[in-house]
Length: 323
Image (tube, rainbow, N blue to C red):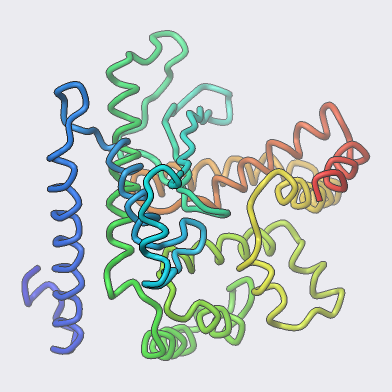
């Protein structure tokens, strides 16, 4: 990165940025050097195993996969038993079609460990229709490995000091969104934006994004509005989002609210589905977290299934049983 590339940064901010980049590179090189010592049947470990090993290393170092919190030195010896370490990275192949129903992409997405872990996809080009020619085994492997590489780099980058939420960062962030009126359209406004950041003090940006994903889903589905109608305090939706787990019960609750929007505005679900899939394609090729559009798509599909086969009574029964 040249000096000309960041003319608007102060010298102190440039130094901080350089330190953050250096830390990320050092962490990545250290991790990869450890992996290079390991062999599987005489072959180098691939990106998928590297990603799994990286998250196991986080767990073994005393970091909880769901919160990222350090357990502290008193628990480091207890956490150092590999047999007690388990991380689950979910892989899913998703086909996305255009309005005519013609497939335009078939790719592998993954969910990182945790109650609401980040979602990443490959940075490979769109596959185009695959129904006739299919996808070769080597191409499927390449796509899956690309998704794992993107997730691994984002996971490692999140350990950088620059990704840690501090009091200084909160002040600068709030001043920025206030001066640019960025948060006016935010699902919970400037004051709640600041409150959410303060609740996540000393956490990482990836952890904060997980909470934002839940808040975005609450706002998009209409559940946030229902919470406000119950006269909840400003911080209750934030506390709820911090503790929330994105699972079947959570998605089903969102589905009930989104079905109301379809009843009021027929065609709403299909429009939202197309929008979510478009966002997924853009974000996956940019190497960014796409958990929000991923969940939007899933909720839209659940709602469309209910309209076609079930109805709201079955869904309500499922939610009550799960909760």
